[in-house]
Image (tube, rainbow, N blue to C red; front, top):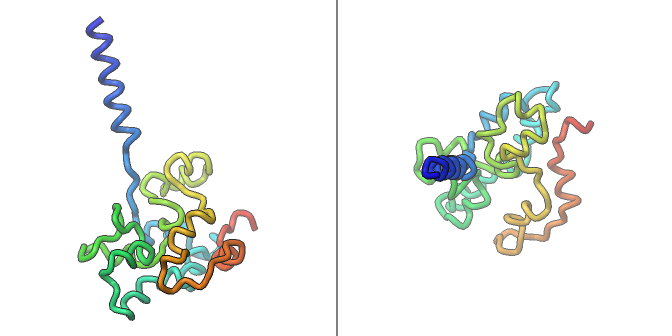
Length: 163
């Protein structure tokens, strides 16, 4: 009986470590390797031309690049495993990158997982929705001018698989 209880305890402890594993941000370079070029729908190139890509630059222009309230929406992974003020790796998380909308990519970034949508979602991939966008695009923002999800999502559409 003691061995059985010990075994069950060990399984529960091991499961808690696995289930509580956090996903980490990999940065734009980890995404663009597979989402760049004409054969991939020029996803990276489309993003690069958006205001999301230049979101951190707008903070620099206003001398707000260290303001935590601004960084929450203008960098990727702030307050988590991504952007940290003064960190040597901070530059790789500047702007609203792929993972700001699709979730930290550490567990779904491999091609073998990305080929299977269910597996990708099980490994942290997020399909952005209106609620996610409104975490930043809301009246708390000093530059908020309203937000119409149906219109905004068309401007950033890059799902090359459905085309």
